[in-house]
View (cartoon, rainbow, N blue to C red):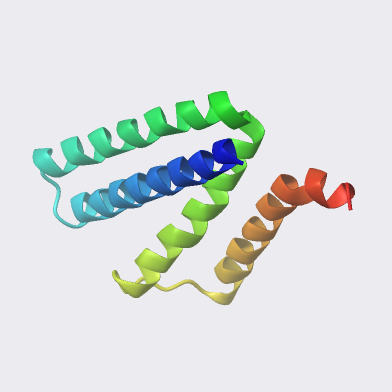
Length: 114
């Protein structure tokens, strides 16, 4: 139980770091500068260091699958809400299917036990 809680906290931390990194990357894309690219690289590196800990604790499959779906949702939310980006119906369908696919991969073993 304690291990799962710590894993959830670490996953949250890595998500926040990767979200900050993605935001820094977008800012660099809007107005490139050395400082922005350096910040982006530092944040992505830090996020990956947290992910290494998660991989050790929970395995590569679960760690990356959960991280991927949480990042997919959060990065899209930021892109749509804060940067005014838009996706067409086909792209939105792809995002929903990607979330569903990762959810099935991640939750599949647990659902089979029921």
